[in-house]
Image 1: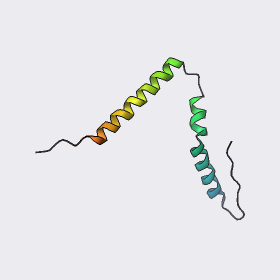
Image 2: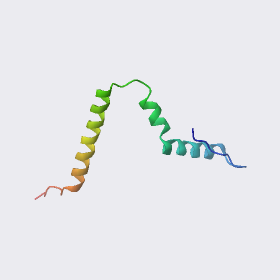
Image 3: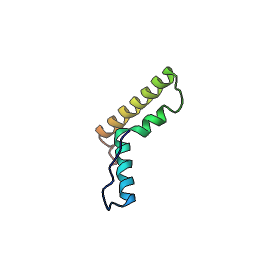
Image 4: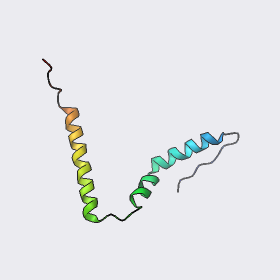
Length: 70
């Protein structure tokens, strides 16, 4: 589990912000949310395939030219 060292005279809010940033970078919360409930292997594959299709569509949309408006 990631941790931080609180510096002397460092405000509590700043330390919490740094801790949240390190937690987000390591992906602990996303891992925890994904393991909260058991997901069948077929459901996991289906979810990952849907995410890949969505990423592909998004990538294609950004690469194509916008339609002409005349």
